[in-house]
Image (cartoon, rainbow, N blue to C red; front, side, top):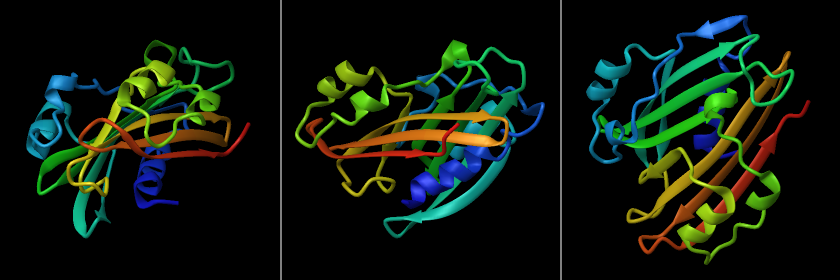
Length: 192
């Protein structure tokens, strides 16, 4: 299990098991979360105190991770019997945003993606091919979260909780500077 996925799973699921957990945070607009530009201070000023925070090392660089999470039993979930939850994980290297991961099982802003279609993503495909197959992603990462200093990754993720059972699907698609897929990694954990 890679460090990025492990870090996010722990943080994303930390508040899923309660009647209502976390503060229903406001997801910032994309122009407020610009990789390589937005500072940690700007995020904290706009969003307030995170639910959890931590750090990890990626490509030899220390990265701070903050996470905002919210869950509500009885909320309008994407699927029946699910406790809807949303989580925004933000990654900072030298106080600058290098990754933003968003997952939601609320019907209104869900991050559902077709796992069977995700299995068809292969090295050599273009970014437009990936988006045509899976739709837009709400998660993006740059170096040091990816190995290629000129490349980037888009991430598709959906975390769902049903009682004390958890199911999570994550697809990380890495691209070079020419928007060509260099690596695709799909992980599904848990079941209902």
